[in-house]
Length: 186
Length: 128
Image 1 (tube, rainbow over the protein chains, first blue to last red):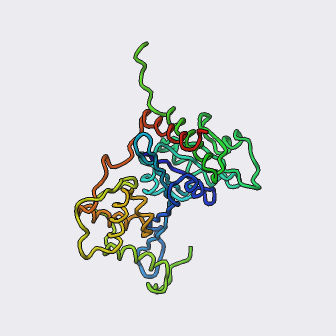
Image 2 (image 1 turned 45 degrees about the vertical axis):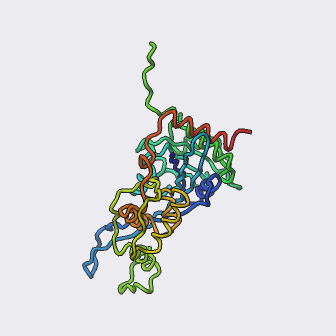
Image 3 (image 1 turned 60 degrees about the horizontal axis):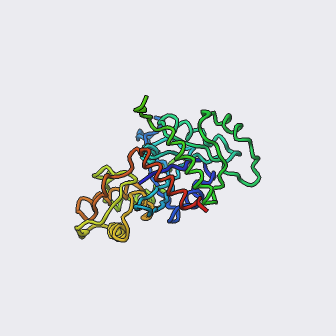
């Protein structure tokens, strides 16, 4: 059982990417979060609460060879405030693919900060939308302000092979982040 | 965001009714009795859903009998929201209608597991 997070802003292609490789059509699950809002003067003296809905996409890929196992895909919105749902989605995940629409680069900043903070390996995947200027990857790296070792690649979220290639890149990156054991033969 | 109406009418506000309905399913409970992870996989158990459980419980049971499913997939299939789904799944676990899969779910993967996933992804999509 593996988990991978697909993060990105609204319209960056998360659901498309999940659907490109999932065995089932992507499912959307909602979680309603109720939180006390900032106290304001109200005539009725009723403590006010706000309810926000956070939704995530879910998909799964079943593998059978040599033994059956599943890859669970979680698409999460990148521009919403973090909630316990973010931690639930990320706990035990091998890493995250941050899908980026270069026309709305800033939509990815919160997700990138969050993954850095919880030390979840992540890669940047630029979804090349028609009409979007294709910036050099190094310019994107600089704009998002990420470490030099974090992979940046192009990934058409509609193409299963490209999404799979992004996942392989993520696995390779996660492998470099494993705690290294000391070699025995020094 | 629009301010709440001065005299909220539960029936008239579609957002409010959407909020009420899932928790009607759970008879007002807002917390599941078990801590369930999104990736916890549910297998069918030997118990039977008792009377008085909502029909969604029968649906969950049928889904898990067809193929063991994660909490996230069950919640997405039911479409009633994550927490209400967790509460219903908890009820079914308590009645032994469902049993959790081995080891609960994903843990931090090690090198061997990551290489296995890498090979599986490559074989399925990238080997020509």
